[in-house]
Length: 101
Image (tube, rainbow, N blue to C red):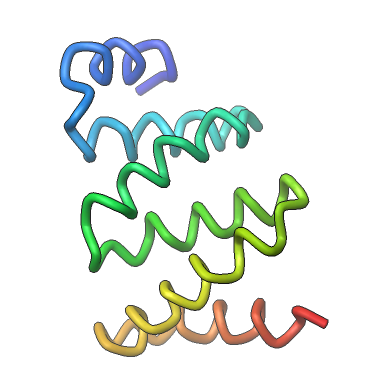
């Protein structure tokens, strides 16, 4: 689905985190990272165990040069990856955080 469709769904149900996550994903695909950040923050704040929302939020913030803001989200995502036994995201996050320099 497109940004336009998910924007309409979010307008109808602004508290629906699944619509917001889908809108954020569509925005990221179009390179509209600044717009995606608020929706990803909403999702991550609404569900404490939503690892992927934190990963995409951290990556979007990094892409925007907001490194200090990205780190806590990525560290939280890593903790969730370990807790939830998601090995691939865990490896990716460990590598990303190791390159922090």
